[in-house]
Length: 155
Image 1 (cartoon, one colour):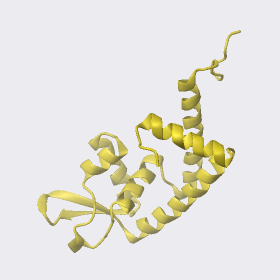
Image 2 (cartoon, rainbow, N blue to C red; image 1 turned 120 degrees about the horizontal axis):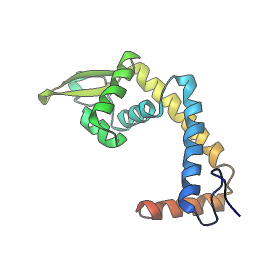
Image 3 (tube, rainbow, N blue to C red; image 1 turned 120 degrees about the vertical axis):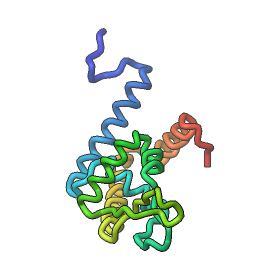
Image 4 (cartoon, one colour; image 1 turned 30 degrees about the horizontal axis):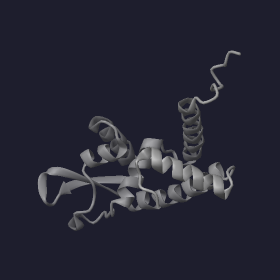
């Protein structure tokens, strides 16, 4: 029996995994729409927030574009575009690195920190709803399997 492009043959784990990932990404993108953020912008803001963001120039806190690109796993040029977009929305600020005059640090503005927190709360809710279709035992098993596949040591 032939399979349609929308159904995976039994045992085609790669296709099933990709379909689940695509569903998760599409529903998350829809949740980001009211915040007027793309997934890359949201991830960049999350990285800045996790890095110990500070808009105080004397603190030296912030990230270089190269670090942001590495965390997002995108080309530095693409990271520049993402930061340009966030800067146009006044969610991030660029400033000289106090330790290296040639370098620039990026950090969240106060508005960016507030939005980042709201997006983080929305992501928690989205995650709970999306994975809420699984019972506690299934979620634990999925976590175990994903940790194993990603090379992350079990907890």
